[in-house]
Length: 252
Image 1: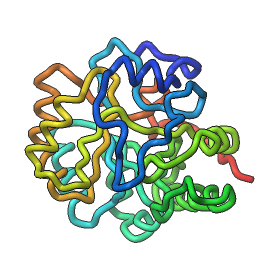
Image 2: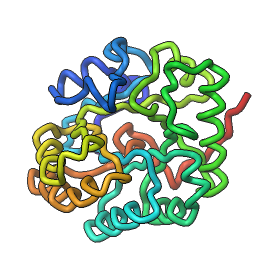
Image 3: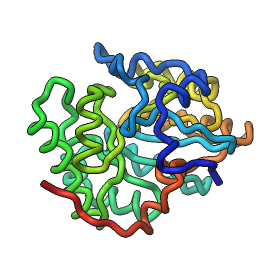
């Protein structure tokens, strides 16, 4: 489906520039994406260079006990798959929702245990946040995440390379940011996503925001009307479907 190899998908500069996507500079209050994110390395993904009309819809900070099931209903009604970057302590709190995410064909990624600014943490603290979340996801979902998204996008290049070397986890950022955490209203969220999305885009959103979930029907239908299809992050990167991968745990 996508002209992509494991060696060539990781180009933050060329992929992001090819999309010309807005909103990459700011993902959350105060904290901006690392200034070195545009340097090419084998650990950072902001978008996928592809000629196929595919986008990756991603949802951060869940699961939410009320909103995530509503979102899952919206996706199920349309037969669409997304990637959920879950917080570890929420995985433990709402395991049934996590199991539903997996059962309905969506992918789960690692979004840290407690959502801190990891760029200010020691390597030991960073790895503890990530490993603890991976273990929680593995225990509930039966498989570990294969990608990581740092809270606020705050993760230095050195940290991204360290994580990739130690755990083989690429850091997945984004090329479309509707800044839904500001609660601009569902129509604005939908409009910003529709305006910024191109083939290969990775779209940031948050299923803990009621306005975001409310925006999804018009957003998803609008993207499909433009001829765009949806894929999980693993699918976009040319990897096997997450639910069907065979895993070898990496620790230490």
